[in-house]
Image (tube, rainbow, N blue to C red; front, top):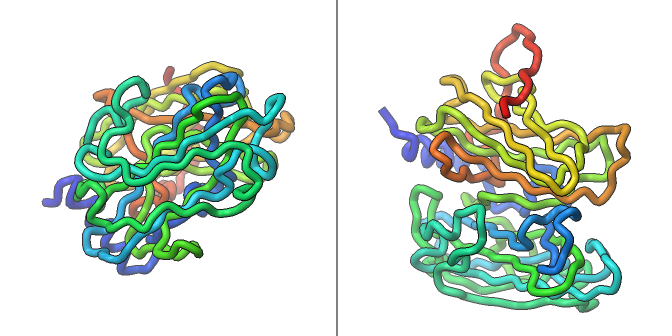
Length: 328
């Protein structure tokens, strides 16, 4: 009988054979999220960033040997995508890490960013302010040899970490990422993907757009606890899975956290959850930046994946049930 690690790797292999798993942009296409967000360290948390640091991991298959590049769209703070508060005064640092401890160090995967979240070996770093040369354009880090990452088979291969930190100022830096085989184009790496333990992003302004995140449920998980920040009561968050047909999660208000706990059934094991974020069409909420993370019953952080491992989950029962209220 396969254990959860073997099943995870098996799903990656199956997706690879089907040609459906590639180094997608971050945010990924299946997530339908407009952009990531990081504010300057002097920012107001009520604008949707609790600690002004974002950490994204990229997994490159061990069998892939060609150079890789990490590309950042609109890395500067000012102009096209970004959110201004007064004068443009923000500087954001983007740094790439690999080597021992880049991901395996516990501080790299903690909610509180007061430890060594910059663990591993720094491979590249660049700080951006209000620089029109990069407004609405791609900046490329690399090339990197895949072996420069931290080899962690349980996460799919060689792991690279991108740390984004608001060094000063109070504006919001909105940006997108892509793991590529080219310094000049977004060319996907077959079998690669991104994952994250705490996710900060902008919701769509259009209430018709539904955003998604995809945690994977292995055989150790019997319950999950979700925490979200500064949702501004903008709609609902619900779970779709083989056993859950829209189970509701708690939603936070302005500049506050909300948490809820959700039981996992046997039907949900070794599959992804589709956590859907549906806006309230009556609120007309714009520029809503939010934070979300998940823990299992042991208080361990659970990663979200840029691709739904095993495919996008579907509710398996034909009998309609009312969505359960969140357990707080």
